[in-house]
Length: 603
View 1: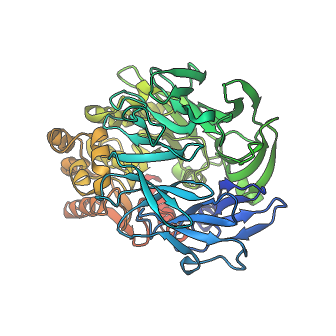
View 2: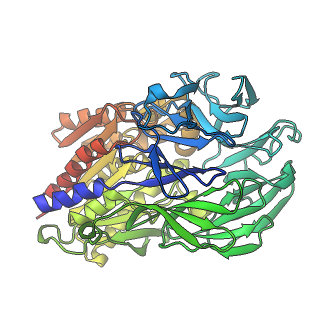
């Protein structure tokens, strides 16, 4: 890269980010900021004063303890995702950000995960796999005595838990063993029968569960008996569903207020989420006025008069906004300062639909360089999201913007299997339909000439499942792709399932196929099976502590390609897990990966 381009790329990767975690009774915001290289806790006072709270070795999150000047901090070690819970006392705000030694341990056992779910004035709620390393229990811990009560031990993978208003019961959301489906159970005195609210065999997703006023029902974001997710009120026995807010063409998202008497609802349209405030019965109160279109996240204040919205747009790394839920008016709280010369480099995407041979259409966002580089004219990079139960959204991506600033057109598809486009679309890659998703890459490749892009100079980039797609593309479509950048991807679905963390196995098998019943198919869908066909050079990035996709997935593809003389550079980061959380590692890996693509795609 020229020094000018490299400077821009590094500046983009150096941009800071904000995220809101909580809002206390006094109007203080508990936020995350990555000034120190990974996301650390910062408190923003009502007058705008910012107090850095933590300086931990890795990223962390937190929640206020209601009624106290204290924060429960969730943190892991070098990306291992074995979350530990500690208490940060704020009766005397720290003069300097505290390190691990400045925290009081609450729930610590480095062998297991302890994931924070909720905090009340008296207790904290978390889920953990410490019983057997596989199944996740939901535990309530008394903050005063340390006494712990297991409130849910039904086995399986817990995604979230919400405490009832009387603090007696917990609603648990978990993954079912059906592809891309979830289930809801109630544990405690309010449970009806066996506590099942939804059918684990139903082809449906349920999330963002909250308690309705009076604790006699649940509020849930769901596509029960629907194509698109809506907001429903569900009886505790699961028999009565009342739809409060729906849209027959778009998925909706839910952020319920603490009491359940109000909610913010988001409508998802091609990667952009617009917000509106509704009363608890679904009646529209007001639209939320934000300064840009992108992807928001919402945190409610305890008094329910305000929310804090974290907003990321394609050209805005992140900003925090305080929203009056009576009017929808917003006021800025914190933003990332982007220098003017750098801001001019940021581009927004255009939205496209790519036809496939079987009559489907793949949604796709195109980011085009403002100023062309003759050496890279007509080149393109397909960037595929992870998951696969996920979606690419119109939010800020420093990698996308860095690739564009380096002269490359970036194409970001939501291949079949992606969420936010309805139940039918996200189900089109389940188990033995896996390679239909890979075939979408070929359809996009066929579409390139119609967009003025050279099919001979197109590459793949992706992380996690997206990394698998990169390897599958160069292995199963070797004549199409000139290079690939694989970040924490799976080179073999068989060895991936054999070696991933035990608590993840059953829930990855539901999506990809089981080792016991589908081994032949898993082998046929594994990139390494087609090793002899791979000719495209690869740049591979992996964290040594990755609990999801073991480092061995990267090592085995590197060793195999080295044996047949195909270029494959592997960069391993020993203080990272599933992806790169630390700025210094991103600054080392991504400019090198971008230069790798420029070298292989440029004239």
